[in-house]
Length: 116
Image (cartoon, rainbow, N blue to C red):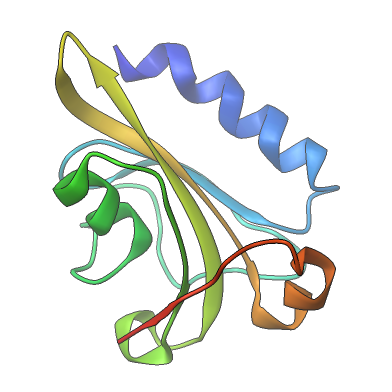
């Protein structure tokens, strides 16, 4: 089912001019990844979703997550927005996009929380 969402990863990556990290994930791992020129997170397709990441939070809460993720999670601090994909009431995965925290000045209208 997630295969149908792969083209959205390409569209989001292009919409960010190739600068943002964009990934599709299932309940356990990253399925498709597009690294950005402004941010390249140290993960690859098939890697497990890390506890504390935006993708992990989305799976756990079944909700959109927009957070500053501390460097303690994956080695660098970044701003992420993650959306669940829910089919028949079940979270089957989601899509996450991330930008460097320096980009936050461009997004002053977002309410942001820092997690560790």
